Length: 149
Image (cartoon, rainbow, N blue to C red; front, side, top):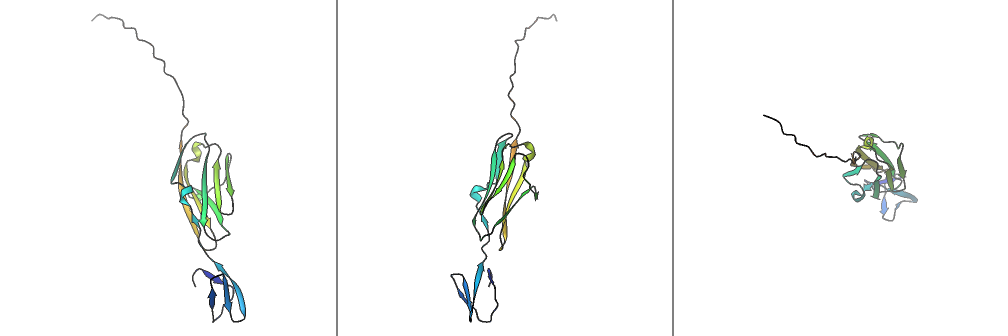
């Protein structure tokens, strides 16, 4: 049976939907294998922010059997928290927090959620606008001086 792992093998199998497998004189637990599903409402295709601001990526699994494991990639390579960046992982979610975004944080971030059944992933692009500089331009009136032709 696909998606069902049995702890004992037997020629006679009666399957009961409440989660137990009954064989003659034997009782074993069934381990359902529901693959994880990442909620796309919390994980946008791209995030645009300005340098120096805060932002977060939230990877929330709405379906899938525990235990869940989370991994993050940046541009296809393992991502490790550093400096003003933290990664918090909970039972059904993982959050990357940038306390102060810098231009070096630009890139594609992938959340991978996995369990015993399979893994899934979603990717977002972090677009960082450079620092905005305020400046004033002072215009001086021109003094026109007649010249001889």
